[in-house]
Length: 205
Image (cartoon, rainbow, N blue to C red; front, side):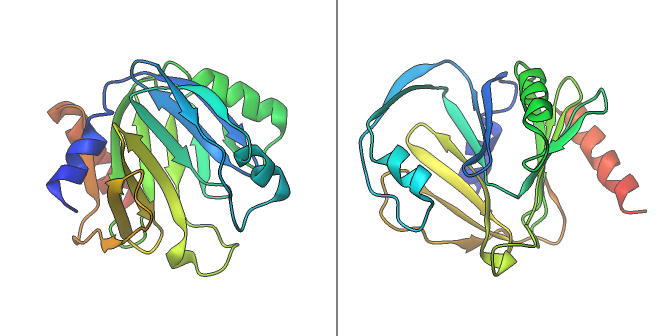
């Protein structure tokens, strides 16, 4: 993975999450960093549900942070320190509780498996957010697991150990292999890096 991509991901570390939202068809999304107004003009959304097509046909004015993280439907699980675990098939009540509790936690690190794209996001108050391939929806290796948008650019991670990086206005997406034989660790500090490395070592046994 290119150093510029790692820097873009690392720039979200230490920022508190806010406006954490879930939707069974859109996925889980949240913002980090200072808010700003964003206007999304109407556009066509091919290959999605009628509900999503109607949503994209409207002009949408929203608040966005400096970093916007999106995890796609069927490919995420949220684990909170108090033991609450939810995924997009959980009840609306549990999903509302979990996303409300995640709000305000700071992202301190993430790990990415270069073979599968499986990613774990770690937060300072104990929450973990896992993105991995779904058994549904065709070829798992082509599934987009998550993406983060930063200052007009994006990083997308795919289940087959691929990633994409470029301008959000780009018409096409070219993927590249993450590469590497070990799990990639991106951390806020050396102490967090050591803690994540220890977690990975324990998980390997």
